[in-house]
Image 1: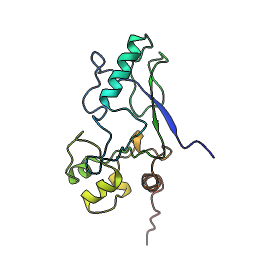
Image 2: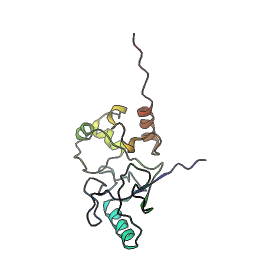
Image 3: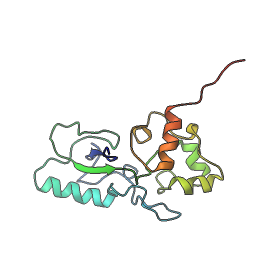
Image 4: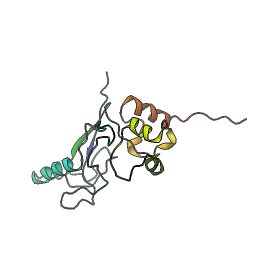
Length: 163
């Protein structure tokens, strides 16, 4: 069986100051604010990431270079980085701002699992709810079965026939 985990390296954004990750770059917690499930069990929260980056910098591994959470490798060429894992237990995604607002969530106001987001919206999610082209919505990125179903729908929009 193929490994269902996709590994990516996250190193701080170039806006980091003294090893601090900017607010909104990485959440304070990956736990769903409604049910408490960890939506990203293989990914560090902001405080954990800052600690890892500080340890990397102290060891001289050069973990203070530029990359984003959507990239699969550091762009600084230092070879350093903090490994994060997205796998079949992960529910990391990005919906459009209007959808997040309709769920009564503030920008960077926490995380919601798919089930709790749908409960708040009082409907099932649709492909148009997701931010197109965002790295966390890539169809080849692993996730829970319910997230993978939505990503597949996003990647394979239904055929429309004209009459």
